[in-house]
Image (cartoon, rainbow, N blue to C red):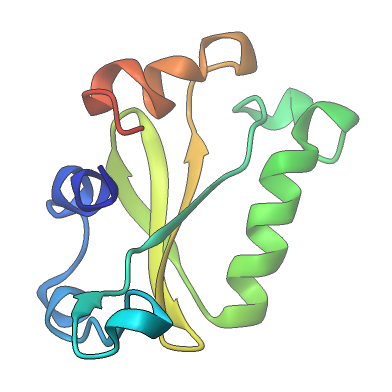
Amino acid sequence: MRGMLSNRLAPILSKHYISSFQTSPLSPASSSLLSPIQPWLFIGLGNPGEKYQSTRHNVGFDMIDAFAQSQGIPLTTHYFKALFGEGIVDGVPILLAKPQTYMNLSGESVHKNSGNLF
């Protein structure tokens, strides 16, 4: 199930990040078994357009923007009706997403069009 997330997001992960996945033990008891570190997906909800900028409706967008800026992650890729950015933080691949549908329709970016990520 965990591998399904990285498989579905592979089209937006650059080859650099896919090839740089690090490995970590699955459990202390099985230290000889290694698996790739799974990417983390952070989704900030909000509403697109100037009307909602800097309002309570866009706190999720603001948090993604602040985190992206602090980590030097540009949000430049459009995929699944969302604006995406990718980077690595402390050795973990990170995906940031800002759905470009209105908040009530954010499921179109987060779930439906992504083929049941979770």
